Length: 230
Image 1 (cartoon, rainbow, N blue to C red):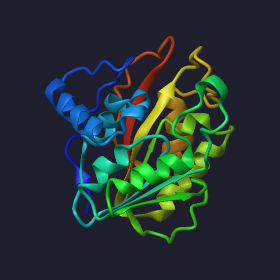
Image 2 (cartoon, rainbow, N blue to C red; image 1 turned 30 degrees about the vertical axis):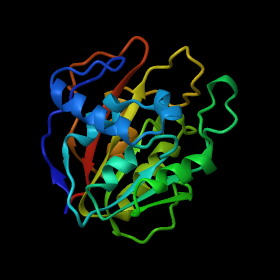
Image 3 (cartoon, rainbow, N blue to C red; image 1 turned 90 degrees about the horizontal axis):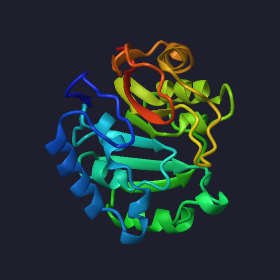
Image 4 (cartoon, one colour; image 1 turned 90 degrees about the vertical axis):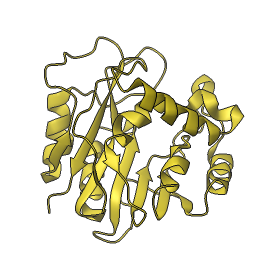
């Protein structure tokens, strides 16, 4: 069963990690080897590492990535676990100048070619259709803030439902509303996140950004790791 390596997580501003520089460098290099050259501009290795470096994956773990496109971080996870299910709703297609390349079909083909234990699927993170208590880890990076008001709590509840007792829900949310065309809907600070995500189903918050961090002025990312209480 998956477990925590550390409960310490730093707050990241514009990709600058505070500490653990060599670990982050090694992670970034490995991620880059798994990412097609035409997609490297979409990678934010520092963001993925901010949550993943706290988790000790086991070879028997089954993982789901909610809102996986356009990342290739699931290939990194797949090397350490039994299976990875990468789901998305094709939400990145049709964003005009901010559209992500590759589109869903190409991304799915490239990602699954990297590891035999990765499966992709168009599915809704609010209602995955998976069995109760069937997974060890749920990850979701920079997805919750793009959902319509109230929908982030539904993802939290679904993650809780499909996780085994003791399983982890990990990922990131963006703070603030950047002026770069990214369609943020939900705005977060620590209290809003606790109210809408953590308290929605009574997660145990086992790793968090420091409470004393002030609301960022522009755009920054908070990593989190929540645990389904045994």
